[in-house]
Image (cartoon, rainbow, N blue to C red; front, side, top):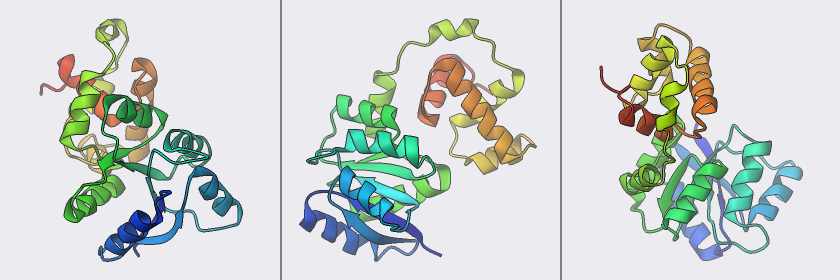
Length: 213
């Protein structure tokens, strides 16, 4: 069964063109388009299908991408949100990620790269291209004080795997535990270190020597 996608973009021609591209992807299908965050919420309230993934523009009237992704994090946390925008500045990237976006792409992304990004987002729970990861790394708060935070041996082991391409399910297999346990390690570390994403955990692991086997 194909994973379902909703596009949220106030530019109708762009949204329809994007819909046509995605509907040619083997594993994904667009189920509807919304013009902004408010329109998306109204469609949810009208019993429209809840998608697996939302491709979300940032600059929109009435309710922009920043507000929309925050609302989605609070009301539909299981939906994976990929920002898809013309805005590639540091401020926009960091704000969208802090508000809950699990991925970030520019609108000039090649269709093949878009399909790859959607696949990784679906399988791994996140996707940031190299340029976005650099922004995240550069803007990362200094967590050197975290050396005083108590991190268990199992959490340290989990940190080693955050820098790999392994999915959480694969990490669970490596650690001989359930995926739910791995998710608990992730959540506990995010709380302890005031981080939001796996990318943040990976950067922390590298900076503090936990990525060394």
